[in-house]
Every structure is written in C-alpha cells, then in structure tokens.
Length: 100
Image (cartoon, rainbow, N blue to C red; front, side, top):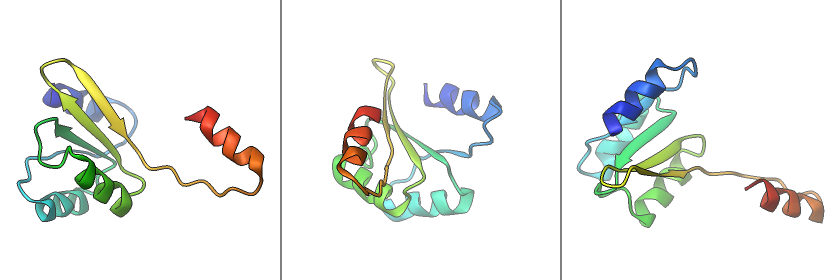
C-alpha cells in the first residue's frame, strides 16, 4: 500500500516530494527528510516512528511536512500535520476549531 501511495503522489501534479522511510533510528529518518527535502513522509503502522513521541518530534522539527501512517492490513491511513494559528480574537479560536 505504501508503494502504491508513493507512486500515486509522485505521479500527481502536486510536485510533492515523498519519503517512504525504512529508517531504523530517528536520526536516519531526519537525514532522509533533509536529503530529499520531503513534503510527505509515509510510514508503516509498525514503524518505530508511528508512535506519539516520534510523531510529535517530527511535527515539531518539520511543521510543513505531512506525516501519513499506513496500515497495510486495513487500508486505513492516519494523516498528521501541524497547524500554527495566530489568535488575534476569540473568534479565531472558534474558526480554527470549525476548520479542523
């Protein structure tokens, strides 16, 4: 499924750079992201980086990167992204909640 998703994104007109990582340690993953200047990171659900701690680190280091966790057994995708919003009025909070 990851291979198919990588090919689908690469074949699209988005111009996004996809990294389908096989890294074993976090530093290897960071190196892959930096080397390829990734826009999207595809990880298997069984990856050591699919847990909350690693995902949080990734999104803090790379706020513009989309992280997709792929579950080959069920075809479910979990998509993570970081969103930073400057709140200038209480209405901004309500708008952010509604747009999520």
